[in-house]
Length: 329
Image (tube, rainbow, N blue to C red):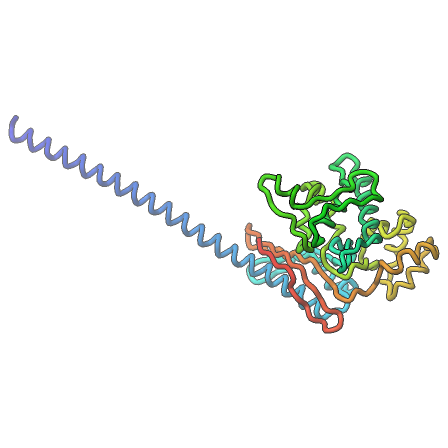
């Protein structure tokens, strides 16, 4: 092989090596650039996520201030438009929407038994009537079993005996740890009051469909009396088997023009009889000792959303507002 040819081959080899190195560096730089862009997007996404969360926190603080400083937010048109969830308002670089629900207009399922462990037949019958109303509302969906009532009782009471309610003809037995221990995964019956309504999903007979059906009508807070000023039509009807749809609607129409100042005013609602009034007088109220509000505050920055849900308790006498349950998502 001639020196000239050898030199040409060496130069060609060097060129190939250099080209390979250039290609490798280019690939490395491309990968580094892509990773850098990805990291920048992640940082930007995290920043926007935190900004959205701060917007949601601002919404919650606005709600707390409104509840603390206003005797009845539902009579304040400005606050009602803000706290209805239908409108958004600007917060820093994002927006926020707030939804607030008055919990005192719902049935407290933690009080199906009293402090002494005695069955509260009035509230138990009310829950049974509510189940009937909801089953009629969704005839083609998952039926809510009467067995839900003794199952809730077994979950919240402090004994380990399975509850049987003899005044229910069918599906009248509850469940204790012997039932839940056979599930996959197994767990124990709490035997103490529910902390949130979502905990119902652990109780025998409560499927996600059943929970969605009943969640807007029950609560785990309050003194047990139904606030007639904020109760839904079905909760009002569940107060007595003698309250029909027309009377429940009349109560709702009456409070739209002016909230009831005392329970005696309900007696003047057209269609109300003495028998019905005295049947609900002890279980209904217009001024609970403590007010509970379920708040959903949603903050948005560009296309990122963060939501805060909270349960607020207002002491009517001191006006103090306490955050009972708080969750970020």
